[in-house]
Length: 427
Ligand code: A3P
Image 1 (tube, rainbow, N blue to C red):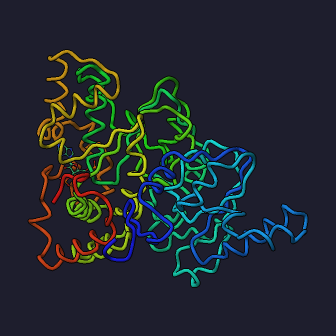
Image 2: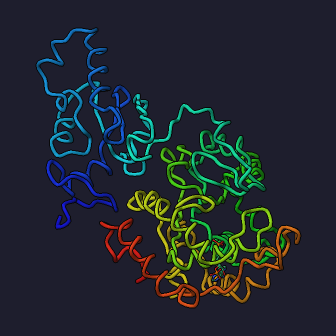
Image 3: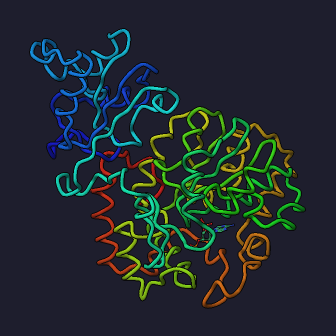
């Protein structure tokens, strides 16, 4: 509280009327009911005005209620100490307000039929935070700059389309028996697909040697992946780089197993730089310095690393979510793979486990055409490229200047304030 904020999950809240305990409980456990009305705003977007209107509608234009009861009693805030208490004591349909960002909002909203209303102010009045959801979606797409834009985030232009992104995010149905791998790009996605494929095959290498990784674990949000997954029966393995707020909401009502892999963002940056530098069909950075700027601004495919991790971190306490890091996989692959097996309820013999370990190792994976990008059309790249580039922790030290590392740390500290340092295995 020393800096005048109450920090919670990387976001600063007012120190008066809020407490860490209530924020934690409200975000994790508050139950939104079908009959509730939830007003969600970024501060200064017209919250009080909307509450007044909603109350007057509720009272059929009668002013008695709005003249006799304070606004915070009529529509308590879900996340304040008093509001949370009040709402928990109330019976029946209720009106409530919240300024919580999407990823911290009580997940019960996604399985309830409560009505939520999001007033939108012109971006300038709130520092550009709000995006007008009413803007014609068509207008949001521009490919002229080498990107496919969707909901304020850019995606590669090849293999993705606006229509599929829209449909996948809004309608894709995750089933209880699915396994979903979520990562920010360059965090070890393909490595984990190899591990999960081998676990699935009890260490047998036939599948990983004969089927490309994107067919074994299709991406929900790509054109081909979406089609493929919709045609698939039974338990499915799938991947996604989608940020939390765009992820299909069916996840919240399912018991699907979710594995999220994080990686030191400085290594993610360097790995991303090498990848994007060779991809013909996207904007290539002129230098590492330029890519560094893009990365820090979130001006890269799938948006900001900081937003991605903050969003998905909000799921880490759920039983069906396993949070892992590239670093722990490097440090102790055997125990990490054992943890994954346990999470998936899969029992492997010691020999099968040995095979998973050996065949998902960097050296062996580098030789597997079905996993290393070798089967992709060569004209996608400016020069030969394998996804298995270096495969180490801390490669950023060989690339970032002292000034870049310091600038990175400054932004990191700002954006990740309030998260316990022990959560992340990097310095
Ligand atoms: P580097 O570019 O730092 O080498 P993603 O699959 O999410 O795109 O991540 C790619 C990164 O994972 C690359 O990092 C790649 O080398 C690394 N990687 C892939 N397979 C690996 C393995 N078996 N062991 C360790 N790292 C691996």
